Image (cartoon, rainbow, N blue to C red; front, top):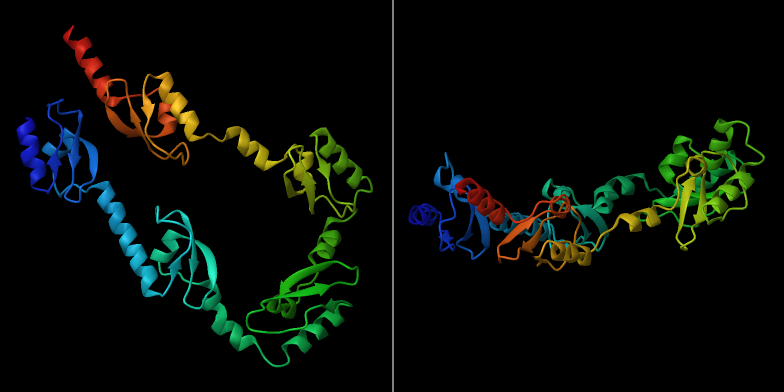
Length: 321
């Protein structure tokens, strides 16, 4: 059967590297025409219904090459490391020098630089009296436009309302009638709890942290906090009262490392051969005490699964006995 398996994969330009027949349901080691080494169950190759099997590493390389080709066609540059998949985020620079972060699949779908995409529309809306119109709109609301330039690139402008709140907004939003967001929240939230700030500060103290604001404007507004570890973030008051706290601390408690994976393998008498941990659902390379090597997700190893070849051997022995 091993010779038959070798002849079968030779049609695809593959080579069977396993020297011993392990059984039709066992994983055997192969090398594709490009030299990638991987494992496949013999059954899926010997009794394949249609189509040639594809080396997953070759597929990933083809996807990478097509993606980088699209990037080059648009005159773009990849700024953030190697290509690792369509669902990862990348830092891109376009031919005009704009930089942005985007999922790889968006580039494959034809998306491109958001600044360039809106430049034509921005250019059309930009006129010589743009700044004067913004100042006039702000004065209608008893406020001020604090920006001194109205240009194609400057899509955000700074404003101050009659109560002294400051924020940034797009010119189109101001022309459409939008104004101070904090004032709008105060209007819609009705009566503001006079003890709101004290309650926020007390809730932060219970968690060993500090509320960094000195003004309370309603339960729907966001306020700055600092936890006992020194992490700072903003959160809605109602979320703090519901018990939510520092997300960074919560993530640190759950985060695992490659050292945790190595310890997990050592406990099973084996090794974790991977050098980097990218999450519990990303496959790592493992080796058991018998020298078998395979790939599996950390979540599966943590759940108790181990070497598939040893599992088959043990089942065969039990059956023979």
